[in-house]
Length: 506
Image 1 (cartoon, rainbow, N blue to C red):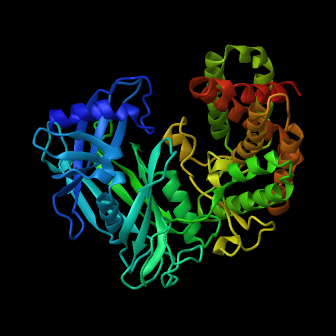
Image 2 (image 1 turned 60 degrees about the horizontal axis):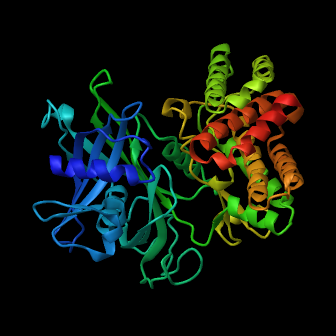
Image 3 (image 1 turned 135 degrees about the horizontal axis):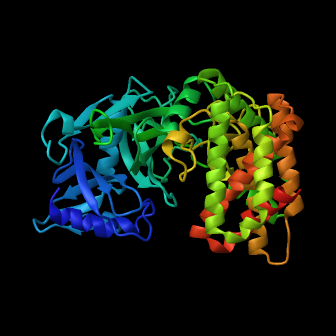
């Protein structure tokens, strides 16, 4: 990594949605890079991924920055252009380049490995090496990319939607596609025609901010898919990396770099489906009840395939300590919330004294935007009522503002339940924001109750016995929302503030 390129990246990164240090100037240190073999037929292109440690924010943040360097300019990549170096190489943001997408998916589905040298005093030694290893969950047919595009709108990662082909004509789930995508048309997700060995499209998430340890999004969705659950897309595989980290006892650490799974064309997220319903004045109770049952089903499967933990005094104390930290942080961001301090503390104390169920792995950041409405006819649509077909859950990475170590620990399933209750409240808040003077509060209350009814019907939960705990998790989520809105979207702050007031005073 030359100083010239490092300077260009420091100027470019703050303008990217996934850059976590909003309002700060990056102070980048090149930890190292690993390289990919360019796809066959590609000439004049280098593919490399840099690991960059930013020490310019409140705490050091490690970023994964894939790059393609081309000898000739690529007009189709103009929006992804980072810089042109003095040696004439044109540098592009890798995920936007089909050459990178091809190399990444080949690494995953071929169970291949690549490596590169780290920077610093131990550069060139084994201790400083960076490795990336593909781990396929769809063995037997490495997939090749025919076209790729980046999914717009993501905040913390970059997802690439790939049209793919396989040598044997089988899709990622082992079912022969014979040139048909999952929506029944002989086109890929971009509308391009496909040949006879086209496979179902793939979506590959590239993790931009790297953490020590396994990413829960990979771990949980892979475990659910391996258990035969149709409530998550089929898993294709992942990339696991190792890199130097002086904070670790042996000077090295590891974690997930990317995750690939089946892409479901023609789907919409539940947030948009719910907004459409409230805009049209339609109840959402049937859909909400089905979503409650689907949520309980996922919790049931996770409890069966992942470890569960009894609620010890230490674990309860740790959960309550996290809630109190969030409460204090919300009051610092939104001082008017201090009026409810005593009531919130009484609720937390009552929750601590309640009988807690087993702790287990959960979604961790559960809301309507993390659920897909799959049309009827898809494998996952069996068993649900309603014209939308079925609900499929995605993005199990957990709340971005919570430390990764917290997100990877067993938790109460009630946290997910509370998160979805807050999401229905947000639909009503969004409607009121767009229609001043109008209210959708009754719509939200009906949807919330239907969701709870669906969850109870599948799980057998005694809701009355856990109501205090559920209230505590819901106000904890609303406090999280208040922090987020105060920092990013102040005009929406009244939505969580109103919920905190309601929960604290009832």
